[in-house]
Amino acid sequence: MKTKHLFILNPVAGKSSCIEGMTRAILDAVKKLNRETDEYEIINTGAKGDAGVFTKNTAEEFDGEVRVYACGGDGTLNEVVSAAVGHSNVAVCPVPVGSGNDFVRCFEDIPKERFLDINACINGEAVPCDVLKVDDRYSVNIISVGLDAVTGLRQKKYKRLPLISAGAAYKVALGLSFLTNMKNKISFEIDGVPFDAGSEYVTLGVVGNGRWYGGGFKATPYAEIGDGLIDFITVRTISRLEFLKYVNIYKKGEHIEKMPFVKYVRCKKIKMLSDKPLTLQLDGEIYQAKDPEVEILPAATRIILPK
Image 1 (cartoon, rainbow, N blue to C red):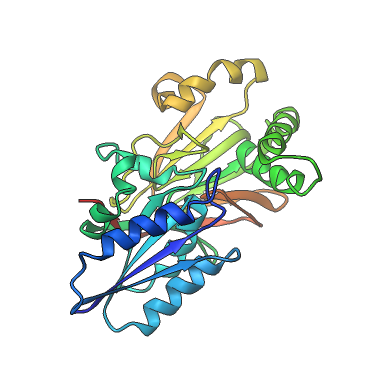
Image 2: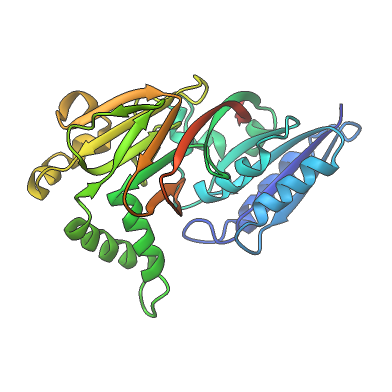
């Protein structure tokens, strides 16, 4: 069977453009491909959504196996995976050159550097991977609601202001959310049954297929990408001072055992209910919906792990 290697590069990923270095590495690696059975293409994205379009078009037009290398951050990976769902001939390799590369942290026995080795990726094995679905959107890693999702929405707005950097916009957004969005009235149904979060008010809820998000927070530490289950945690509202005391515990992934106001469950579906539309964070992207329902799609895609 023929194989096409599609390298999708996001030129705005990370702190500086990855294009030149990645292109050179790719060209060096593809010299070793079998020209009778393999072909390759390098594409630089020009706008949001391009990575998904290129993936979908290639999957539908190429008669054979398609291996897509998402060279960017979690946003680029999300676009590629979302387009790959439903196409059995596609496998996706995350090449973490973005500013946020939380998904590859799931593979704790594989150093991040291996995912940056194009030779290792080309020769890597594709393994089944579950995907989270909410409405017509997908997430391969984590969906969250509450404090961090609202912070992401505010950051997106503040970044448009003149003279405000992305880092400054995030700090301003987080500070305002910390003052105003610690108390969110959200109820949950787990597999059709009401879920007791310990209070009608929560600071945040996290739906995990992967384990890490937010640039290094191990929110769902026991999640597995191929077990067909959602890992779900809620943090009920407590005082701001007490919340700050536990931030490092949460970041390390020790909160399920050490934070008594955290609830944890595994399930297939989660419905989030609120009087008003909720802001969700999906792999770093922001989405708003009324009473969204998240479900797990077992083995909905394949992820390439470097050799």
